[in-house]
Image (cartoon, rainbow, N blue to C red):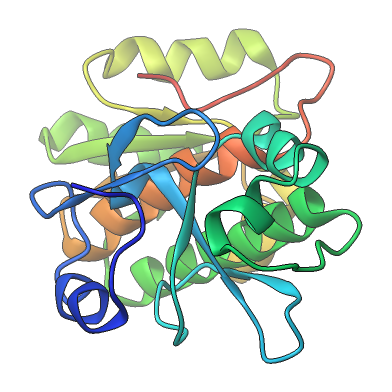
Length: 215
């Protein structure tokens, strides 16, 4: 499959943007990946490159692996212009813009998951949910105590652990001052949140500890 798709075909395939759907080719690495591991960009009417986090903007999609270095290389090596076959403008700080869009998206999904009853927050509630065997993912605050975080991850070592948000960010999404431990039950929102958090982890500026979504 070529990496530049016709708009009509692309729009049809985007109706089911999950790991079982079609892949796209990163314009920098050339690697073919599922949509969940990529960021879509388009050239706007003024030929400025725009991140299409929702994968819904009109126009030819320019796809990059959800990694900060891929975005930075695409900007510095004129990969967007080559893939678009046109002179395009890459705005400064594009990787930071993508990271912020993904950060907001993840926290919005977390709030939706809470309202859907898929979230337990706080040490005691998380322990109680883990005991039921229904926990499919953990979110641990990046600035929380590492020994305390490890106590919880050890209880469900088989589930993914997201540790790319601060306690204040998690608290704001959950309607409280802060949250260090968050457990998620199975649901479509949980699945989407984990996928989006993985994209965010690849694009965000690494902290000193280099925290990432754990496999």
